[in-house]
Structures are given as C-alpha cells and as structure tokens.
Image 1 (cartoon, rainbow, N blue to C red):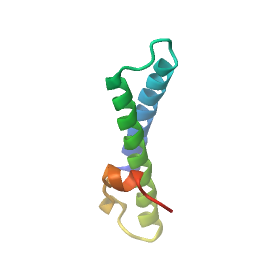
Image 2: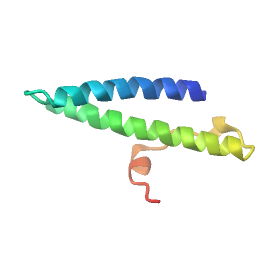
Image 3: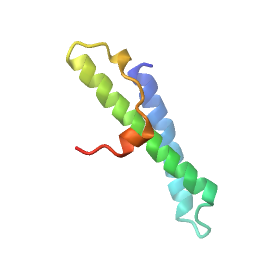
Image 4: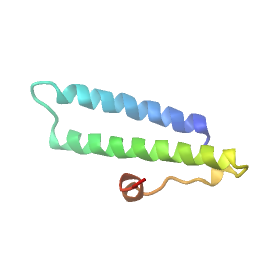
Length: 81
C-alpha cells in the first residue's frame, strides 16, 4: 500500500465521519448502528494515521516503508506516549 492509498482511505473515512457527525446533531441523532459505525470509522482513522507515521519513520531511517502493517485497533487505541 502506497502513502497515496492511505491518504485516499483517510479522505473517505473523514467524509463518512463528517456525514455521521452531521447527522448526530440532527433532532433524531444516530441509531445504534450509526454510533457503532462512527466508532469504527474513528478507530480506522487512528490506524491509518498510525500506519502513515510508521511508514514515514521507516523511510526516514532508510528502511522499507512497505514493511509497516496496520496495527490492531486495541494497540493503536490504547497507545500511551
């Protein structure tokens, strides 16, 4: 997966997230399924940004960025700096 593919995925996820957030402010709010989808989108965005950062770090130090893989949601979401 190339960086541009990751950016394209991020763009799609951001569009979906915005759409869901816009609907969440409407009178009816979000259904349980939509709330679950919003959470999934948020997690996938975090995973994409994490992957992109790791790919860039590998490239910066002369390593092959294609060796970076998407980390599990639990690892990305529970990361502590």
